[in-house]
Length: 254
Image (cartoon, rainbow, N blue to C red; front, side, top):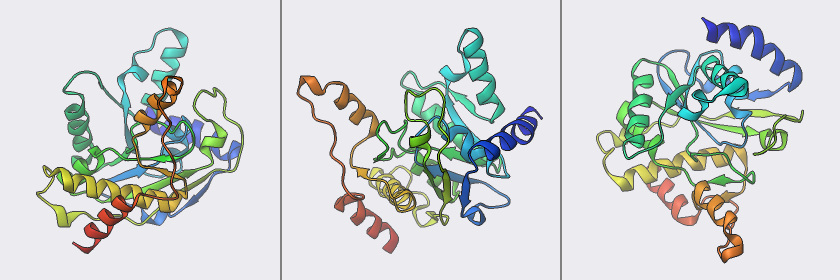
């Protein structure tokens, strides 16, 4: 009840009035049944701008720290994430990945929409980074289609470290659903998970038209922090690497 009040009475009128986001491809979202919405992650604003523009509820997996903060700020952050329907996941320890996978599969098993950021963290420079294979594992285990989504303009509105967003043009673009049923029963094959993830990231890249970096965002951030010690930041390319495009081609032909 709180979710729908918070979304329909508070967030939607406020965000539509302030940002006036443009939404494209809403017809690609199913009216019923489970699906994974896999998007790029440019800003804290992504957490609320995309979900409030979709009629159906989208459940996101949120790190536990968002729900356990202290003081007024911590309580407000926790209330916000509960209000948008986020699910807390403990990302510490060896069992974290399995816990996140099980939680996501539970959402899909109940016929809901699950939102995932395959990059695993926000982009620190507005570029698109290599996706982690958890999204592929969920897609293959659940049989749910994957709908690519591109957030455009949210990095300029609120890059990492900026507290209050600026009002800039925002576009939310959904692509055609990706069906991976041809890989049913192959979710334990690492090469298959990598190929499926690459295909998902390729679809996001085509929608977002970002520069693509063939490394994980977390590794790029670590390299940037240690650049004075001799490490070099990851280099950008125009799109997914030739290896990843080849993987997409193979998976599409399968």
